[in-house]
Length: 179
Picture 1 (tube, rainbow, N blue to C red):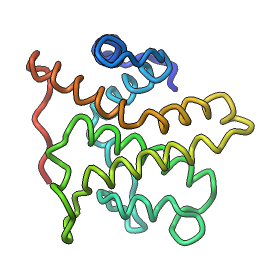
Picture 2 (picture 1 turned 120 degrees about the vertical axis):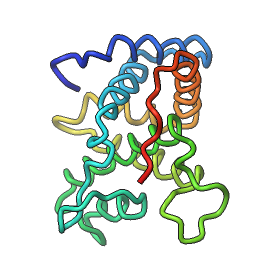
Picture 3 (picture 1 turned 90 degrees about the vertical axis):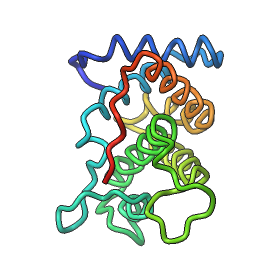
Picture 4 (picture 1 turned 180 degrees about the horizontal axis):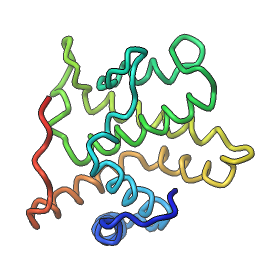
């Protein structure tokens, strides 16, 4: 995680806890804390698309992100890089699916850069699962958190949609960024 607290962290901690614990019965302080921290991180738009291609351009499409995570057939230079990119994909899928569902393609994709909800869920669960398998040395302590995020991905996604509803009621959510 991080040493310094983001100024929005206490607010997001409370809103996420209200939705996850209060409405969904998901009583996992580590998951709640992680998701609240994720909201803080992605409150800065450049963190949502922090992956870059070989030319330095933002990687914005899910398929390209998945390719960037592959150390065998893709562009990840190492397994540590795979873990980092997979963590980002899980975070991205959870955030976009829960907070900005209008960014999801309706139904089947037909050459749309927008993923479907099914594709986001599949990529998010798989990515968090892969991150959880990095369970040695410096990653040993946080690996179980990513296993729980993978196992409860759909509930976490639903919880974030409840967070969004709460923020909408408070008029605290900025409008979505349109590319």
